[in-house]
Length: 223
Image (cartoon, rainbow, N blue to C red; front, side, top):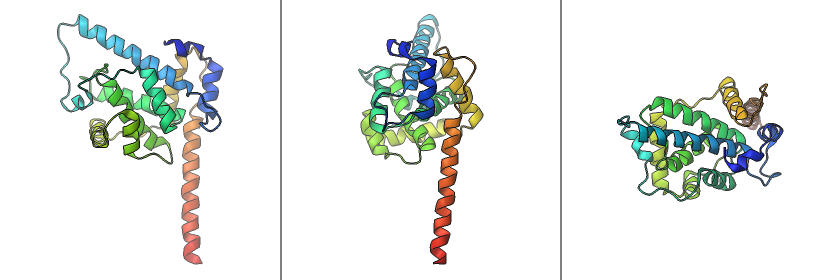
């Protein structure tokens, strides 16, 4: 685990996932450090496998869209912190992004996260996760500037990602909880806290807003 994530305590992570607010907290969401550590270890494992194996898995031609010609000079932690700083995405977005990363790798067994594709994959997945979780979002053009890409390029990555995922983006409460539990174990949290409340709360708020909008529309028609 990275040095920055060693200072994370179970209590802090739980509080962060429950009540983090960019308006009240200038610090980066703690889940980012845990996610960065997981991705970095995955990349290191993939690199060892590539060195030790005489053969390599054939990569899906479409998944090569995430490969870049020049590797960005930015760590995973720094890149995620940049995304967080400028998009204000909440902790739940990164948990859903973690779900999408796992699904993407399972759906594309020939794909391996490495230094050449991780940045483009992350900005794409976090943008899609943000659209799924948050009520309001920045335009693709803004995410592109944050991620260091052209808008046209990010648009293409988003479309390719959706097709490679077979549009399986729904994350129910039990799935969300299981991935939260895995992140919790990364900082030695035992017992399992009910972090799915963050997603459930968001769903309830969205439902309430839809009902309110529907009520206002009917009210205007009756006036």
